[in-house]
Image 1: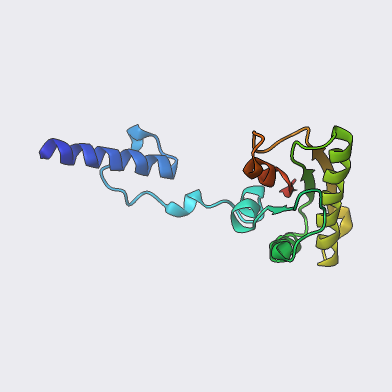
Image 2: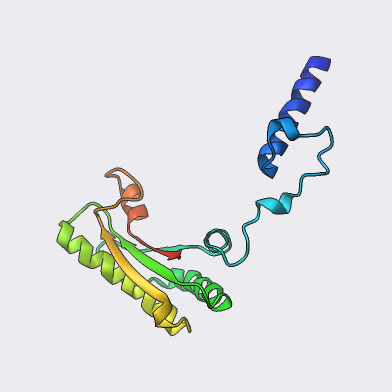
Length: 160
């Protein structure tokens, strides 16, 4: 029983050290030194954007119009960008594996442009936004299943 308790305490101390960025050797018996806020990203950073705001919108097959379901996502993105006016972003358009490379490069560009256009409509200065298309040349989710296709039909806003 004592061995199980000691093992549990050691495991707890180890994971507490991992969460706080401390080495296992520097973990004290007391966990009071661990500040859980250390794990939160600094406001205005790319990591903050990803954790505070959804960074992507998804599209239907062969489409580049933004569904009403994603207007709220873009409103959050615009609000964050307006809060941090010194930041710039790149909107990257992606496609699933179906169709030609050339066709998907154009479709990915249309998707990226559609997101940029919406963000500009919401007040973000156009000079702060760039676009790129990865088409089907870069896939986010490998595979030729409908679920993989859905995940690859996206535009991702990346803070620079």
